[in-house]
Image (cartoon, rainbow, N blue to C red; front, side, top):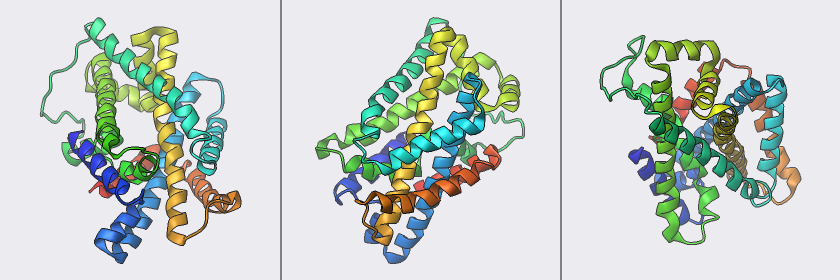
Length: 304
């Protein structure tokens, strides 16, 4: 987590001091033109995978909560992503993110307080490998936690933040502080899952039966009841959605900068964004576990 915070702070401040430059532009400046092309292609691949993964996971959670079909929910999320990708950042993202953030903080705080109040037993920290197939902890731990630890995806998002940061002195709170906060949220949910399901086998059973969505739903309703649990699940849904929308937005901006395509006319934004969404929708038909592996690999490789 601390390594991730340093990574985010470093890339964020470099972007600020280079007028909000994207990761490929920074690679070109410091590592040469060849690396600019390599990083550009890799960043677009990563952002496409991020956007796709963060359509599928919140859609599964919403499908568990409602009677709506998974396909309909996926299309609705894509519709929001398209709007957020095309319109100026202060028209959609800037207006709704404060509410999304409040939901996210409520869910994490509620689960965390619930763990303390109920005296929930949390397994002692151990370096013993308890994976049922004895898979190595390193690097699989980082591939599993993903954005809750060291994340290359965050490096692709720094221009969005750096271009809207009024004062450079806020950089530590924004880039370093938010990564620490995200890590704390990840640890709260991990602790809740370990406590509630009491052992690796029962947690594995729930994951096998209903995936991460089932775990989140069970933890939320058990800790916070029906109403609080619903709000907590919505908070968890918000987290991937607020990553997916900015992923597609960043991909559009990176491609536009690379091809030197003016982005003021909305038609030109659509010409770049539409193929991304078509490709992403096609990827949603892949097995989620396989898709997550590719995303995790791209995420950690970019961070490295």
